[in-house]
Image 1 (spheres, rainbow, N blue to C red):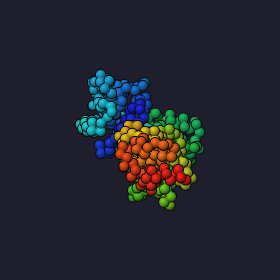
Image 2: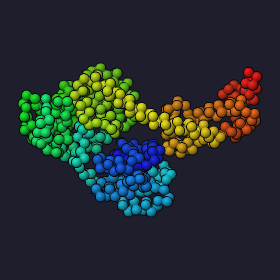
Image 3: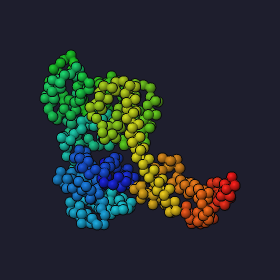
Image 4: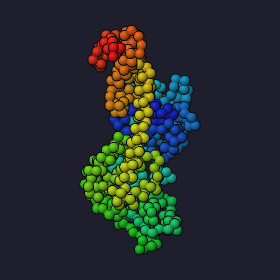
Amino acid sequence: MRLLIVDDGHYVVEYMKHLLDWKSFGIQQIETTTNSIEAREWLNQRHVDILITDIRMPEVSGIDLLQHIHQHNLLTKVIILSGYSQFEYAQQGIRLGALDYLLKPVDKDDVEKAMNKAIHNIKNTTPRPAVHWENFDGLGYLLSLLGENETLRTEFEAYTDLLGSRLFCCLKMDNCTQADIDDLQHKLGDQWTCLVWSSGTQLVGLVPEEVAEMLITKPDCTFLSPPFSITDRNEFRQLFYEFFLGEYVQSADFGGIFNLSPSCGDWESAGNIMKSYDRIHLRKEKILFLMETILYVYTVDKERNPSKTADWIFNRLKDPDKLWPTLMDIVSQIRNNKQMSIQTIVGKVQKYIEDHLSHGLSLDELGKVAHLHPVYLSKLFKQETGENVSNYISKKRLERASHLLLDSELRIADISQMVGYKKNQYFIQLFKEEFGVTPYQYRRNMVHQ
């Protein structure tokens, strides 16, 4: 199932994203956005099982999203986030079909109860979402058949159910002109052109068997595969790799290589992609691995270029070692972008700590500063800095104390209070563990030096 979280506050979205173990609720994919217009487009283009949305946002409100879902007969279940002053809006949301509303700041237990309610409601809703061909992503569908991404495959299940009743052929047409492309599009009609792409001077894709023969206007340049059913994924994948990339693959080949492949949306696996490729030696295995990497990039990179992706699959993948540096650069950029976001959050927390050393500085307080769950903040902080939050706070307090001992004539008890230690003896104990001498000895020794 897919969850979409929408709030115009970035840190609220991040907090919600990491608040629960979403997989325990059957959520395989989490999408987040601070742009409510983008959220409405998501609802149009892809099936969303559960929407958690702020009720008041600029341009498109949570109520607007609810009305959109209602008007388009979408099966999306909605949970509203609201403040105390927005209770009337929340009531309106309930009248429009929202399952629940949660008051900010959101409580973990309340979110769990709301999710259980939504899951129960989904299980009791039997109709399959309607198929909208105008929103059909042909390239995404092809990758769902070729790759091992369960979320992507589930997203296109309704299309597979409909397309599985007919046979298809793989098409490859060399030395194409614009006139050839226009002619083919005219013969195929709008429904099938979404499964055909330009790759250099080639036209490539999947076409229904009943129209395949009439596409052969240049017998010497047009090639068709034997017919196949897309409901048999192993048969399709074997035929696809042999027809387009000249490699004979078997179902056993996929199991081994995909153990190394990235999982959709997991930015931490970006580094693993680079390490894993160096361990692969056979061309066939490299092609399978890079196909899964292309799927990773396609699902994670919101600025993806479909034409470029088609060129990778049908053209450049024939020489995996030449394509690999291009994909590695893109994967590295994905990782760096995420890392920059983490650095911004951790940097903000570090500055807050240094500016508030006299405070208690609990994880809960810092979590509110970062708008992240305290446990997740602790994990991010350790991942980014290599040390625990508590160790960092202690180090900064003792550093500040050492400067105050040298640069002022304040009493040691006053310095202890100023750096956040209420008990003087505890401060002295920690200072001695860090510097090897008591605060008094430290000041005396430094003055003599």
